[in-house]
Length: 365
Image (cartoon, rainbow, N blue to C red; front, side):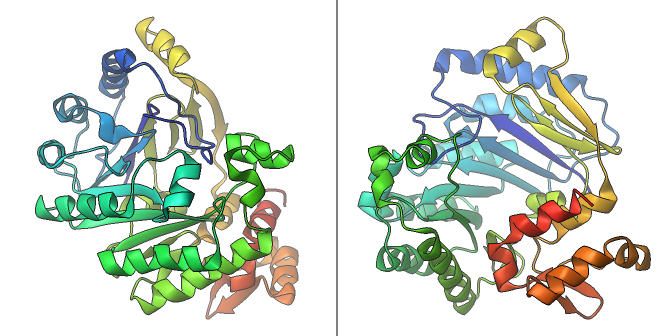
């Protein structure tokens, strides 16, 4: 089946680690933005009916539930098999959850990142472990049992012990799904840029070394498995039956359509992306122009290894692919980055840590 992604790049504050196309934008723009997104959805020529929806950002949990329902009603398929709301801890109420449920939302993804006060403060977030616990209780009380908790390995000031404490909270809350991301250091985030420039703002001097971050991540894989939350993708872990159906579409190369600023799409052999800035997106939509910024041909033969190897189940190459990619397959098998499991190939634990090196090979063959 296919899915829909809705981009809401508005945030209450810009987190120091964030490298997404989101920002603190005037709330006065929200009605215009939602109207533009509804217009884009209405104009779309549907070739299929989606069974999953994902509202990401940004912080879409800031959207008024009534306004949210007005946008979602234009998407066919209600009730969807899975409809996820990304939410910042402390940014919603029980009334809001009830509004989400009426609009078709049945899953939430909480951007927790850490349960430790010092680490939370340095990210720019304002929640606490107790607030997250209250949010989880509210979700369950209102009938949303399926939810995800995001964690980051490598935050400023993080130690092995503090990371372990965050995992203890995962166990205490009995989370059915967890995402663990290793800190990305690049110029697109304030923290990443500060690290690259050798500065000390945002706690940059206290970011753990790369080998420590890898140790945190490997410990998370082991600890979550012990909790009955096995890894099914490089960054994602779930109790059986709670895997993200929407995100699995990305890794299985199923079609999806993105709406809103900087939204990405894959359908009918083509990938495309909307313009990144909210201002440009609004300008184009309000002047009757396409928001599309760029388009490329999808190459399934290469892309299925690039995305499919992210999954713990790996990929089953065809006889032709075994010949086409013989050299990189053999090289990575010999190096211990790939392993064979029956007729399938998958990353080893070492391969996961060097996954970008493996993936890049398959888009350059």
